[in-house]
Image (cartoon, rainbow, N blue to C red; front, side, top):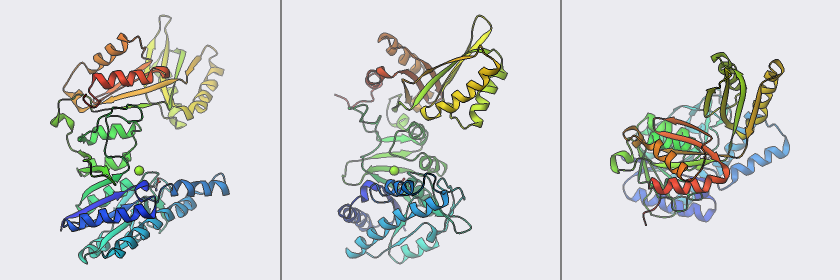
Length: 406
Ligand code: ASP
Ligand code: MG
């Protein structure tokens, strides 16, 4: 039995008209000889609307009650889609996460899938039914409803496909993964094939499209993921083991940029490892997510440390520094709220040297100062002043062939 798990996102099932079109697409797959399991998100902006409803009632809704509320979104889309399939003459059945015993941890609103009971799905498939499953939700051992965190339906799809030994297709409103968000780089090129590692880096950099945990899970089970458009037949992107490295000669696969971070530079720190430990230990305790770090000892035996954090964490970080300043009045810090954090990602960096040098050369030629840099085996991230964001994206995009060839 050839089983495929197809996932349709919220915009793909945004209206009843679209739901009927999705039904046709599923039927086409069925006609090709596949047994189809479908994971669906809530219709359009339903989840956002449910969140606003809760916020209108109370500022701090109970996580358990939020899950009770949010799981209703997907219940609407699975039933409507199943009705559409049946009305077109194809036997189908819908199930919620709890009905399939998609067992999760008990942390409401950010639960993790532990296991899935597949006998119901298998039975239905054997009876020639199309199975439609609510994404984003599960149930704890104590029968409590849970959700997996926003965007979690991708993860539901991957988990179910892995468990069923099925192939997995993610359908969305874009036709694949691009070298960069086309809203930021107009001529961004679609990627035919990208490795799990590259995709995880891109997803964690906020390159929308795929939920990070879904890619992580696919990597764990070495499950190839196809990402494509619901309403067009343009070829999408394959996320799989090995990547563009094998197929093409490009060194850099993609780029991402974010304006969500700020840079803090702490001056006059006592130059010892214990200052670093104290600084980042306290940031960690308060759950400030520190990203890039650079540190230097100055001539007077003091140290300065520069790091980036999400904008939202600024007041917590400054609270920590203010407390420290009371003990050590010489301690000072500067905050730069106008930075753009830009990353280039590519498996090719493992085998090609000089990528960082080329990036720095391009910026130097254009008199653009780098505020801070970090690198990993397959990624270089640097911050520049926000006003240079567009220019840098264009320069790097052209230099590393991230744009559509003229
Ligand atoms: N409906 C949920 C959300 O909007 C889950 C998903 O769409 O993946 O976050
Ligand atoms: Mg999504």
